[in-house]
Length: 90
Image (cartoon, rainbow, N blue to C red; front, side, top):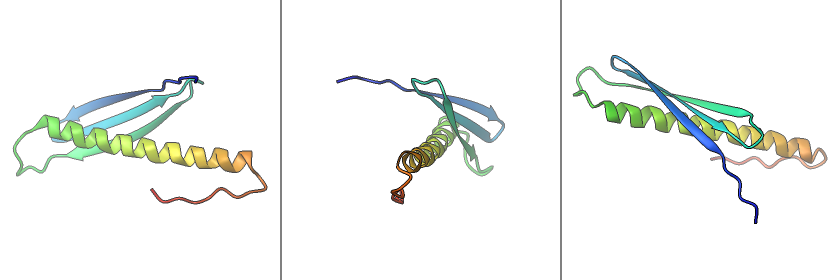
């Protein structure tokens, strides 16, 4: 069995009550796919930077997963032009 490894790098940026995240997957062919996410602390909430990091990162990873599914569905339809790709809801 041949093992493959893909690397995902999550970059977090904080600015005041806002946290932004980028999750970038680099596959073995070197083409990156990036998802983004944001979190904003309610001014009434106590400061808890870790929670903002977790929310922004999870949203970036969810966006990355959605983008990867779109690419996979496109590749399926390209590889089997006579057979339409099934639609799936995630």
